[in-house]
Amino acid sequence: MSTVAYADDAVRAEILAVEERRRAALLAVDVPALDELFDPTIVHTHAPGVTHDKAQLLEHVATRKAYLDITRGPLTIRLIGPDVAVVTGRIRNRLDSPDGTERTVRGQVIQVLRRCADGAWRYVSFQMTPDGEHVWPATDAEKASVADTAIELVEQKG
Image (cartoon, rainbow, N blue to C red; front, side, top):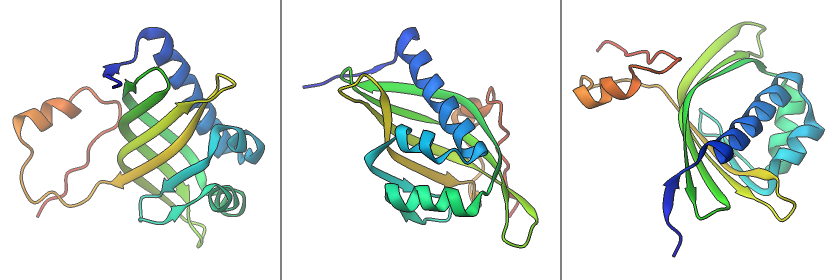
């Protein structure tokens, strides 16, 4: 049975480099680079709940050209065995809209990558949950968990 452990510094650096390549490729609309980064089996769920397979995701990026900026907060990287990484952390996407205006979407992301036979890490899953209404005030533990993030958590007043 595989254990779950936090990534060591070397693996952490590898995963952060892959995430930076993903970010740069989305901003540049570099579809060949994204094709290399995404596993053939990727399931990518966007903030509004739209879910794409690899072909749909690549088409989406190529035709929408929506990403203007992507900012990540600190990332937690856990390994399941040596070849599966689960990455969690906050994200802020600045996006173009169909009407030409800009919008910002903030939220929490869960990403799963696997180390392939060629040694490369590839994304197999991506899920963004956008910030939404907070009915209950944040607990002390919740406040502490976002206190040191580089991306603010926007609380909505009810």
